[in-house]
Length: 171
Image (tube, rainbow, N blue to C red; front, side, top):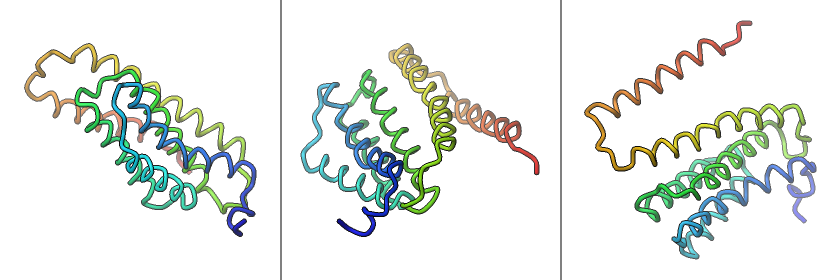
C-alpha cells in the first residue's frame, strides 16, 4: 500500500474511483451504439482516468475527456445515438467528482454539503443533454439556415453573460 492510498478518506475513495472509471465507461457506451473501441484505446483512457483520479487538478482530466468525446465523434459517424446520453452523464459525473476531489488534500473527508451542491449543479447541467439530443434528432435531416452557428454562439454567450451577472454574489 502506498502512502497516498493509505491517506485517502472514505469519501475521497468514492470520488476518485468515479474519476478513474467513468471516462472508460463513457467510451464503452459506444458498444451499445454498435461500435467497439480498440483495446489500446480503452487501456489508454483507463490509465489517464487513474492518473486524473490521483491528480484531479492535472491536465489528464481534460485529455481523457477530449479523447472520449473525440472517440464518439470518430467512432460514430452520425453521433446521434441514445447511448450518448449515459456517456454524457458518465463524463459529467467524472468531472464533478474530480472537482470535489480537488477541493483539498487526499486525506480530507468529502463534505456532504459540498457533494450535494455539486450534484445539484451537475443535475441542472445534465438536463441540457436530453433536450439537446432531442433537438438534434428532430433537425437531423434539415439543412441549417445561414448564420445558425453565429446565432447559436451569440445565444450561448448572451446566456452566459446574463447568468454570470444574475448569479454573482456581492461581498
